[in-house]
Image 1 (cartoon, rainbow, N blue to C red):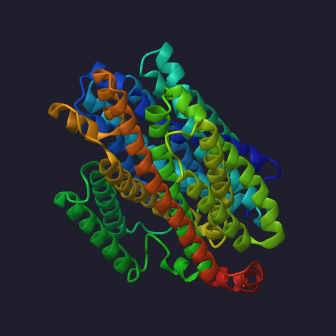
Image 2 (image 1 turned 90 degrees about the horizontal axis):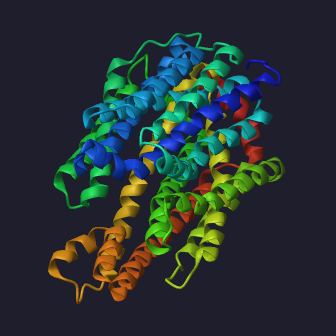
Length: 507
């Protein structure tokens, strides 16, 4: 581990500010889509590719990005990633055609694929075990806070400037990150200079793209769409082939022996489970705020802030509980909070106002603050500085796929619940398809028909679907709690075997 003194916190701060751009990009594009569609004459398919190009390149490049950081130098690759992200942001801002914007979004995904794991990989290199939990909490917060800030910042920018401004906002932030990393962070790389595992790169990249794209398509077209299911099966088969290859090759892309450690395995699984539920919450609540409560884009961002507030408090309190009772109890409390908050949210009905919503999303945020930093701390505690890049990329890949699958599965539950409760009586035949498409389309039809009954039916049906989805999320939280109690060792057990395990892993 490098001894950088207080300078390490400045490095982390600079990276945290840079990571805000990744969170902003997850939400700010959706806000600008109507304006982009009009200015660039984009079709629905092209609008979907604006998001999917980013997600697919991010999924494909995560594991190779970690390997290149370990081999070529984490500082060097971080600077390249930041410059690429800034250049791609400018390309998106000044795109004149849909093809240019899709290409720019793909480059943004490539920059993010390097930025996310490599920014995390420096944590076990420059921070001590005692400092690591706090450092990961800051890293998680930087990733999360950009999500509600996207609608707030984007709403203001779109009210005053062209849609390209939502991408240009990244550039000054990236410049700060490049300067800080260049000046403050010393270079680090694996002393073993691992050889590039070309078959592993191809298998993992194609497999992650196939699985992620298949899940995206399922979310759009439903689980009855055969091509989407075939993509998922093909992606899963490629990933199975990747694991088979990694167990047999000498110069592997990932270190399979990491999964011999219960800490790495269950820390990664728990971080993936909470990402599964978190992505679902962030998928459904903006729709609820806009279609049911009548908020605009900026108001939606403001209404999401209790999640971040809960996350901040949870991350701080969990540090004290972690020191007192260890990771096992901290995670158990976190998943109990998640289950409780989501169960409370699942009792939402049309008469509830934002005050009720703010309570349960705050509890959910508190649970995320307890679980996510601690789970990731457990996982990366087993990573040596030699392989921190690839190990961090593996954790991020699992979270990325878990989040994508979460949105698809939970979106299906939401959609089915919405359709089951819709009252389509007295609706003109030509309007039925629009009402069934989404709650936003349904409320738009109700406004056109000046039908209060239809508006109430659409909102009630959406809340029913949301409640079902939240019960599933609560079940995921209970599953996480069961896994903790069944498989995660207590802190005393971990201390007895930690040195032995880490020594074996590094060998």
